[in-house]
Image 1 (tube, rainbow, N blue to C red):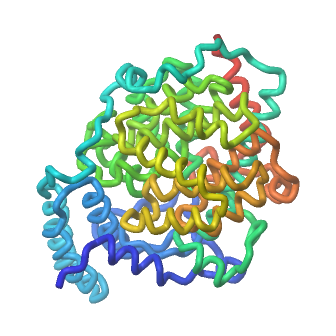
Image 2: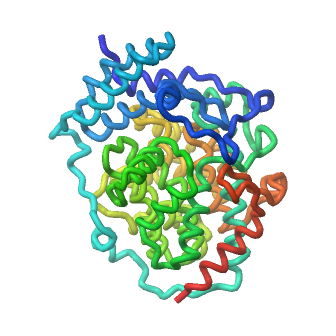
Length: 462
């Protein structure tokens, strides 16, 4: 009997035991690393380890799962999984090359399931249509003004993001139960924090384009700058880079043959859009839409908008619960993403126990990949709702939620950093140091990065 991709993925995730980062080092790339291609890339996509945490992944299996979540019949591709895994283990490069081509064809040709709930929702195809689809009656019409404390709060947002990312990078890709079995109750970094990850590099690229073009930056120019500076991506970003290199420009670069287009990639990186538009959620949403369509579509773009809006609102709202409720209005109201957000907010509004909310979320989103936007925005909402603005408590809740902890902690850390500042126990170990694998950006000062962000935001302020 053929097992569904999501069940295989669920089993892989449930049984994966974390590499104890107190013992095992990370395996991040450095600038100038050799980009995998040909047989090496195929081999990597049949089995990989997450660089920061060692969590196992089978990207081809995840592709099938993601396409199934989007309402397609993926049974033909699922029938090839067992053979592909066996060929990979046997080291049969020739056979694996052929089978992988068959699997990709099966995904590309997978028939749409008309009655699937995914197809009952609507998604705008331009920024103007996004605005028209917002809950305009609830969007504030006030004219935002630059506040004297914004520079300090932008800095705290960056520190919160990088602290959260460093915290989560060491434990991402595992369930909360497995994380707890290795580390116990978590209330701080599990190892010496490393700021290297594959999330923040996209924000740095956006800053480069923003410096050149200001608020007139375009998705096309942003995509071309990705091609210039980013040698390799993962999941949706990998597909987008492949498309861009083929001359497929945004928004098609994020949508064409991209099963990962509803995943977390935009949701993990558009905090920079809120930092560039403090107190101006509508402008943050516009910048996030411009960025998100480079690599995502539909619900993935909604995730990017929501992350940016929450970041912008954090400058004018000191209550995470209020920000979550207000932020909902800035999303396309007929999208599945909004339906999911409302469902989570309804649950946390009536459930007093954070752990019961986490259990609900884990059951509700069991069929989705650990990098999908839905289980992760659920974790973010739960951490913000029950964390009561406390940085450490919110991070602890994210560890219990598991999944894509670095992306989630980066968003939550940004919001709480802006609202309340980052506690010294989280900020000081970073030593004002951001490290990346991008040439020319190998080591950056967090304080200087924040000052640069402030200058760009303020220089174009209306």
